[in-house]
Length: 305
Image: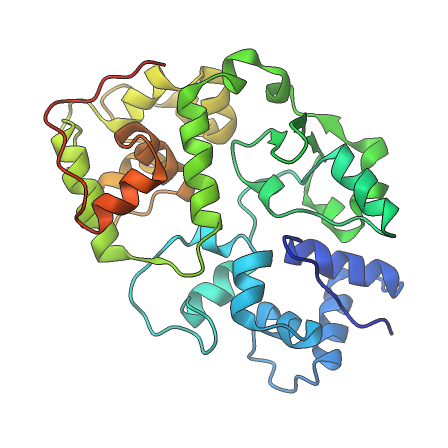
């Protein structure tokens, strides 16, 4: 069998699919089993991520940081003991190690063409970030597949069935400063090699939210950051990233976003990126605030977009 290999920036879930194709295996599950054999892994308690790292001959730390969505989907950590050779706890690694934050698989036509010149195409992890509709390398619209089963094959095999995401051609979305800020926070989290301490993170964003006049207590009915988001972000973009927001009631809690400002809240990472894009000009400002280097705002924030 062909030994699994993985490229820098390649989506680990897609790398398993490519390994399946090259070795003519019948399913993803069989491919995972063969990867375990390649890695000589007898301990079945190891996660698929750990087995893949061993099978590819790379460190688990590098695999997580360069080839999975985990730095994005679990950008904060509760302080549990980290997995050996990885900055994330074993429970988080098992639950979210290869999890994906979107329901469609995304690819770029030019990336595929460049890949094929070198022999084969592969799925990029940064194309899978929520709210992203343009390839940052080629500034071209991303194509999407109906579901994630496309990851079981190479992107080049998906071109015929792929379609341009409608929002990739929306001027309102592409020119929105709020969306651009959101994407910068998404990329910043994806590029981290370790999670942020949950307590430090929560104290920082709640302090900032309070300074901007946003509600951080669940039972108080006044301006919530989710309500502000509906006025700041393009509606079609919000409905795509947060489908449930279309049915939300002004003044009522919308957990996917509002829990970003709640102690021990469990907002989705996209919700955190929305909140941070509202409260900070850039990821650099946020990280300065996290370390106590950013002055508190003197007044509620106003926006130019």
